[in-house]
View 1 (cartoon, one colour):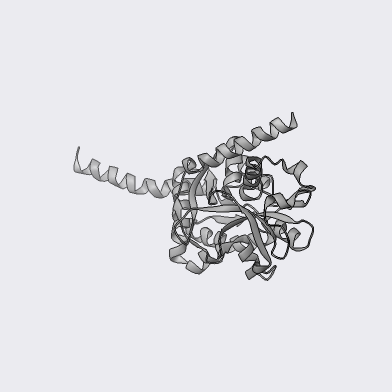
View 2 (tube, one colour):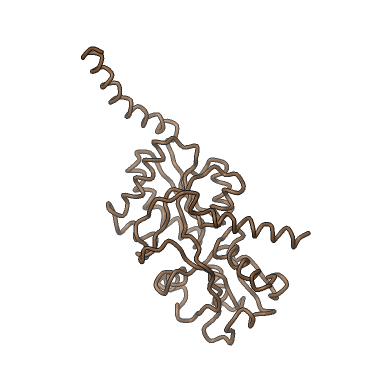
Length: 301
């Protein structure tokens, strides 16, 4: 091979990388990010919009946040290809995977102590007489959403282990629509118990609501805590070009370094930087959701 030919090949390789990047930018001039509604959609958009602005600068294309009224909206948005990056709870991702959505987990949330999990709890008011699930027979229960991990799938699994069918054991069971709404239903006296997520005494949805002045943390306590659940994740569409996936992952990984305040705003400073993950980490959750589905089929037959 002549020196001239080697030079031409080298130049070609140097020019190919920018051209490849421009290829995906032409195909994806706008990217959409959506978050599962742990809080109300307006609050979620407010929390994620600055992140979308950061991603726009890093990726060189417009990135917008799409509000989601429920977990199913995020799943269906990815199924249709209209949501490119989704922030899922474990059950939401598992439901997407089970129903054929082509999406790939790439980052997982990490707690301050380095752990990567949380719990589902049943809250009651601190001054109430209820000390255990057995004290709540014929009372009202608020769950979160059919596709919520800690707000529906795990609570139902925990109750099943106790031999309890929620719809017959409790006087009324309903979906509040978000974790915040579940706690508010309890706070307002609509129900005697509410399912929610909890990591530790300083990291939970309830603590976040307390910091926002929506409720007082000390007004509640839980009467049951589940086994450990894998933390929420970020997942991008499998169909995205590999170089775009790499750019998205890099941008998220660099966010805590480039703008720690912006990163902390996503969790009120309660999380360490994300770490890489994949589908294998969520296989137990996928199996849990399959179990819950089978349980529902048996009860409805």
